[in-house]
Length: 481
Image (cartoon, rainbow, N blue to C red; front, side, top):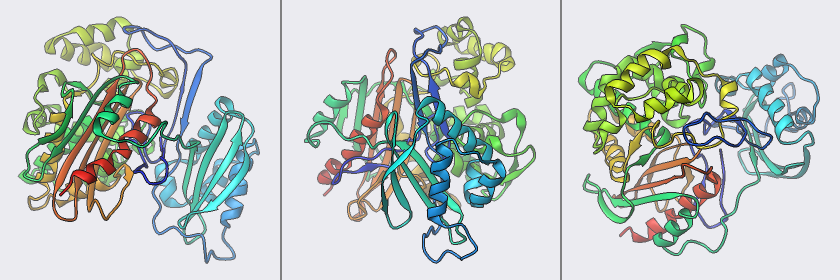
């Protein structure tokens, strides 16, 4: 889900959700209902977030060869397809750059369009258009209100960025006046934790803290997988350039696109790690957990400062998480949530291993479901220690890639005059939003910023909460010396 705030505030570019990729995947969640301990159900109520995009590489809308598609032509084609014009995967492939195809397959794009037409609107009328220097932004009027579309083309005239999103939400009320103001607004949606810590010395020294308690963290757990991987590289057990083959048995649900890659195709460990953090790729994550072993990732919980590591044992893969949330019975899921470590490991080896969640199962998942029993858990201080630990590891020879990986998706459009480096990981599921940043000033001061909101009974207005979280960047900049 991509959202942005008003002028003069930090703008959230990509809230990396657990089930929706920041860069490329469409997430369609339909339904409402289901109490804690019961499986999610489908109803006529629906919500949809559709994001089909990738980061552009040297995109341009000028000097397109005469023989190539034009950007105007691509725009007309996309809008016509949204309005029901027939197309084929072959035509989609002809228009998509190889980079974009790597992240979203033509068949997946057509699925996104079908879901947009069936759950949002069959009418998509362009009302405004603006070039932004690296592409074109459009506003489309639909039966569900205004939606935005961002598109750009590469030097060969092929589409390399394509993004659909609901109209940009605005922060309600005046600009944030203080961190207490931030907390007050976040708490309107759920249980809230906020931590701003001075980490210049390498330790988490609180500047502002509210409710430093254990909460579900969604895909922020992937920081621990990255930590275990970094330690394996530091030991010489693995190298970033080593290759890893796709195993169909390890394919998970989105977010991400590694699940679309064919069995046996290879990518470097660095590419798996980049996808895990920047795109929150679940299949890439599970391949890395399998390579490292569950035990090594569990050790990383302690090594990277999780004070409540036992709550995360056994350490779930995303495939197991989806199985528990979407495929097993409510009885099994409830038993897992209530069980001790041995009972949980037995369930993972038995009923959960035999279950397989599908995208169709995920379509019904919109309400919070056992977020306090089936999740990954940490306090804001533990998350601060995790991201600071990773940045510290990046100073070790051969681990500079860790710093680069964390900055691939900074989560915000930030002021480079205020922040010379931004590392980020975010995660969510229905009822959970967790955001973790590492910030450095040009003068060398460093801060960790953690926001966590959860609600076991109601869905969260994630876009609005993310905009609020991003707007606090300006407040943090004010406290920097």
